[in-house]
Amino acid sequence: MKKGVLLVNLGTPDNPETPAVRRYLDQFLMDERVIDINAFNRFLLIKGIIVPFRAPKSAKSYREIWTEEGSPLMIYTVKTTELLKQRLGDEYHVEMAMRYQSPSIESALAKLRAAQVTSIQVIPLFPQYASASTGSVHQKVMEIVSKWQTIPAMSFVNSYYDDDLIIEAFAQNGAKHKPEEYDHVLFSFHGLPQRQMIKADETGKHCLKSADCCQTITGANRFCYSAQSHATARLIAERLNIPKEKYTLTFQSRLGRDPWMQPYTSEVIAELAKKGVKRLLVFCPAFVADCLETIFEVSVEYDEEFKHAGGEHVQLVESLNDSPLWIDALERMVREN
Ligand SMILES: C=CC1=C(C)c2cc3[nH]c(cc4nc(cc5[nH]c(cc1n2)c(C)c5CCC(=O)O)C(CCC(=O)O)=C4C)c(C)c3C=C
Ligand SMILES: [Fe+2]
Ligand SMILES: [Fe+2]
Image 1 (spheres, rainbow, N blue to C red):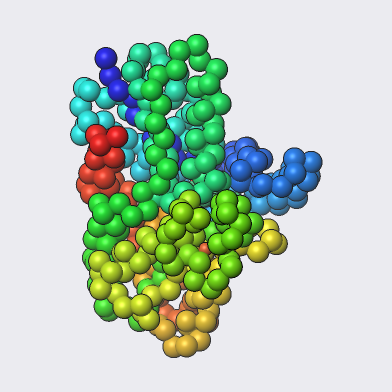
Image 2 (image 1 turned 90 degrees about the vertical axis):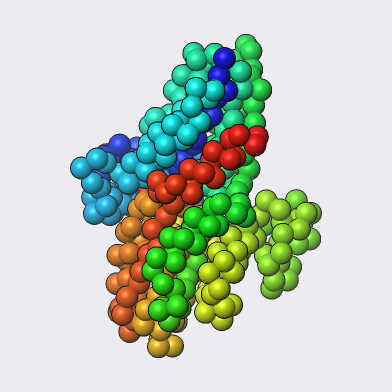
């Protein structure tokens, strides 16, 4: 009998045309953990404003990154799954799913059930915990499995923001670009609304109560996406000997008008260019696979904004994708569970 492993990434549209992007955004943004406002307002905002306006614009961006094999996020997630299967051998049954669109978590769990696995280890493909990403995956898996007559031993990976192999994998990808030859380094993480950051502090006494609340991990902020992001950036910078004054942590991909985690990548890029920074190296360690947010938002949009403000070049550090160290990290996570 085999042990089950379920890798879950965010999801991507089935194709880069507006109807498919609309279906994707609709399912994604109607998730109560992603747009965490009351159900009626969420319905009006998403169905009435965000999806109709955003779908054609996002579809255009998706067409820029789409390859003959499909969406980069899907390609790398499939490759990662295949490589992990090879590493783990016959003792394990590995399946892959996407939180939104396909392949669904329902279908992957059905395959694990049909394979009569004795246990299921759920690994969301997000190094830092956020309710909107990891939490949503956990909730969806629990909703489905809780309806089964017999429930196997379940385990859920929360985060791996400080895993030494993950840090090494990002650092090695960065080292290829010789960070010492850049004027400045950014660690640009996917952002979240500030209210989601505050909700992660169950004590109500820590988050945003001091300017350095995210600089150390404590009981109150152990599940804070921002504090975990700061730890990831600090560890990569230390590993590459990048001095504190030469790097900045920022948050990208803001959606809507509410305040999100700060500082915003686009504002810092413009400020750096105005200060005379010409060459900028950008790590995106919230993503384990290159996707729209890295290939398009950083390499195309931020590069344009940076040049417009007087800079010369934004260089993206490629994500973990199918790198052997990333597979080493996953293999160890599974075997040590
Ligand atoms: C790192 C994990 C992610 C978190 C946390 C997250 C939160 C979050 N995202 C949105 C809105 C959008 N995100 C979009 C794309 C996107 N987001 C992530 C990861 C996280 N999001 C990835 C990997 C991707 C790329 C997917 C791909 O197909 O390549 C998009 C769609 C693109 C666009 O229209 O800009 C939206 C919208 C919110 C609102 C949110 C938390 C509140
Ligand atoms: Fe996102
Ligand atoms: Fe904080």
